[in-house]
Image 1 (cartoon, rainbow, N blue to C red):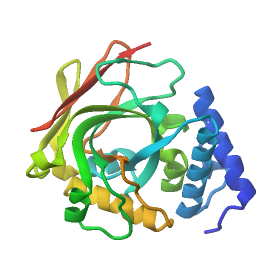
Image 2 (image 1 turned 180 degrees about the vertical axis):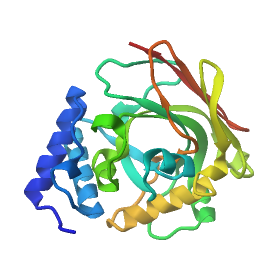
Image 3 (image 1 turned 120 degrees about the vertical axis):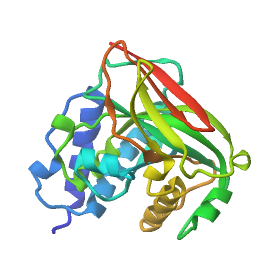
Length: 264
């Protein structure tokens, strides 16, 4: 497998950046360059985030992807990955979300963490838990820039910031008030009717392992997870396609709920 040249990385990141801004879907990158590495894909992602920072966006955390069997099966991919979250991606809970200038958005239920100290290298679930200030329930809104939103490669997904678009943070509590994150029911509903449900164990067997995996992936790129980071641990269920007049909500046992409504 060949590595991309610096000019190819810049060109591909600009293509995806423009597609996101104009809400115009594009062919997967591997349709034109058939083989590039996952390392190249993260370089494209990083360059794309740099383009967003020039527009005064600020990095506030990360999202993990492909951390559940349901999500892996839905996307036909099998390796956990990460994307970057910025401040302008947040949608307030119980607010409305417009489909205007979106491509093909979907929502999925998540568990999120907020860290209180730097994490780097190899960490255990216990160390990760000690480094978290809060844990809560969230909805991530995905909006891949690729045509059809399926049947693309892992490098394609990573290059596109792991399909990340928006997120909604719901109820949370101090980690000191939670005794375990094991076997907690998590559910996503459409218009108050359950659509998908599973337990927190669907996220790599333990959502804290998703946090550990993120720290490991960052370390491979000589990066750390800084204190104060928001981390979406990954979806526990398959995603729901967003349509006008929906109410999308999610609940996490012992933690709480999160919701938003969809408008045209």
